[in-house]
Length: 92
Image (cartoon, rainbow, N blue to C red; front, side):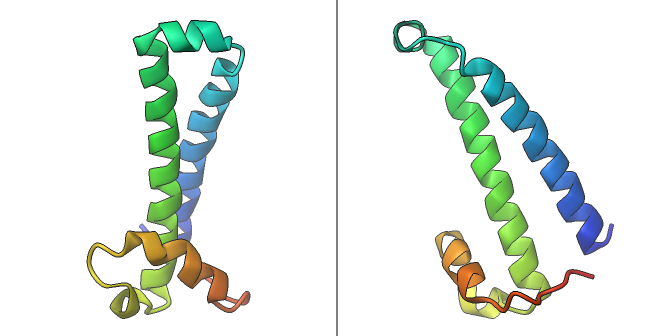
């Protein structure tokens, strides 16, 4: 699978997670606060969404050759490095 297809697939997954999280917005604070299962649903949805964003960022950085800068375990640098990357980056 090529870079664009991988990123497209990841964003499709992200859209599914965000759709579900939007649906869960109707839960009241009291309902959320009193239900561990609802807390887990929302937290897990957020975790999966954030992971997709990190994965896409890392994929972009690896494609443009920034993986040497990031190093292993430096995923938290991904947004900063991407914010400093040229806006003309294209994924093959």
